[in-house]
Image (cartoon, rainbow over all chains, first blue to last red; front, top):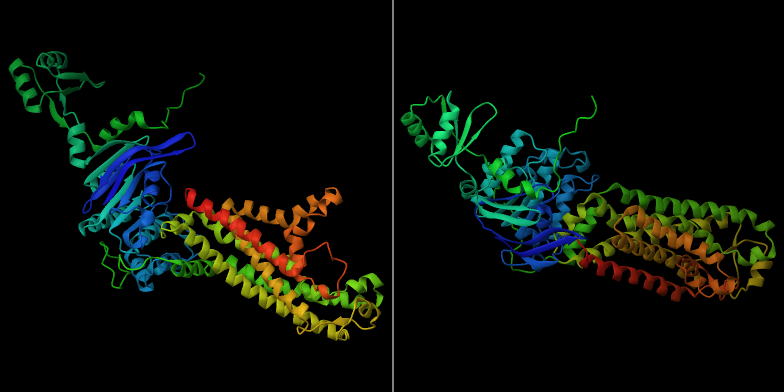
Length: 307
Length: 300
């Protein structure tokens, strides 16, 4: 497992990670979510001993990275897919890694086969597509058969088949009892892959929970209602304590009352119903809501000038 | 392609026995060094240019013997001509030494390197040892090959060894071009230290690379120390400059490769060969210690 406690890291005046504490347990995939620039990569670099925290500690199965005897045997990481010398072959890249931890050459061939790169192992890594580089990065993470694995945005640049492969791989690795910590800015991807979630914004912890709990506790059940007598129905529902907002197309969004109760009320009031459907907030929307004030770089609609 | 990570079919190190050490890292550094083309380009240039340039200059100087004045005859050094290639090679090994580490920073692969080892100083030491051994072997082979090539050229021009106990006066009065053999202790030392000079420069450049973490910056700093620093010292008042001119790395190199037994023109201006070697090694050590100090304290 990975344990972070009070992790803090600043670059100049910018506080990238701020008093971050969380645990990542073995046996499940844990998603690490946050908008771009929220400190996910910085946190992962601190786990791997690359960036040194200003305060706090992070341990891998109880050891700090710099105390590990055979680092590759304990923790593997895909941090940046393109962090490879472009003139070196994939095989030699992995071989140089393997030699640092006394891992036999046969294992290099094995992981190349595992990620489907055995056919291009002797080609220069600089000629690889982003998807192939991601596969090479995954191979390097698996090289030492470690119990703890970190993946920073592993599906970037992968085609749909590759994405499916990564999902299956991550779940398979977790099923073998390993600790799997996967960062992503895509909530929808985590909904499909992860069991646990660590959510951060601007370097601070927002949630450390399971995907199911995260949705349940952050979602307000909403029911979409259409009626030719929308105004009277809205008044009727409000009188029973519901929150009602009217959409531009005339449909009502009702909170605080279940769909069945809304149906009963409208029948009792003699008002016709044309549509009555519960709206399931997606993980994406919950995530956007939670982090909307945590995003450093907002997009803006272009301002119309002239005419 | 399988969809789960099959357990390894080979035996991996046990978690609690031994630990990743210098020997592991050196194997890895050798793999990294040999698997990029720039290494081989640099080493071939050192060898070919070293011999070629030395042979060319020796041939020109030998052809001029008959028309040389007394002063030029007095300073005619067959060993120094045979090591002329070092002037070019010193920059090539500087690039090689700097690239050994700055290419990792440029490509980001330094993160891979640092994430495979828990002791960062091991990376520094392993890299210096591996690049040092490779450059030293090639530089010594080149130095001795250049020496023998140049002496063969001198012989072809009718050169003869000066009698034992020859002085500068003997050399000036000689009608034939002087020729030396390796049995001359000073010649052997000069040729050997020519390779040592390239080794120390390689380590210096590699240390600078670790400190600056940027290819262009490291090479500029290295060239600055060898070429620009002497120019700056040159424009200082001579009484002031002459007191530390001999401590410049480029002049230390000159001192190391000079056959001083018959030379007087550099006396006092240069350090003796072995102290010069020691001082250059000290410069290298200081840079390497600073590099190590920074490496364990900076973010990777």
